[in-house]
Image 1 (cartoon, rainbow, N blue to C red):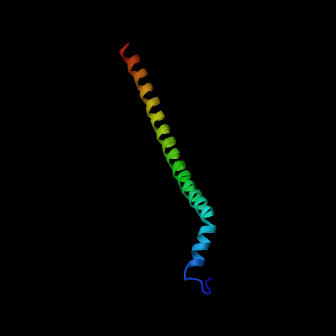
Image 2: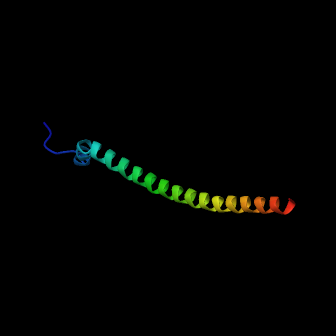
Image 3: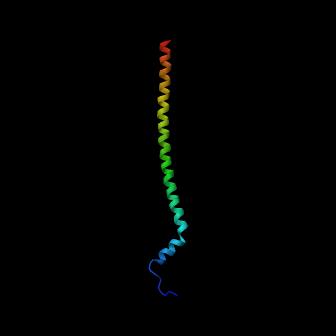
Amino acid sequence: MRLFKQRGTERRDWLRRNKLTIIIAVAFIVMAAFNVEQGRVINAQRTLIQLLSGDSSELAMRRVQDLRRHR
């Protein structure tokens, strides 16, 4: 029987007992970071689609005007 605990064993015991909690916490933080980044990407894509839609509408209007001029 040991009378004295080795240095650092309390820390290792705490880590063993809380390993699953630590893993879940880290996974939660990583998923939250992915979620934030995905939101930023979606907003950037939405803005790009709006810009392209405006350009497409303008191009269609110009084609119609050109067709009317050439008739």
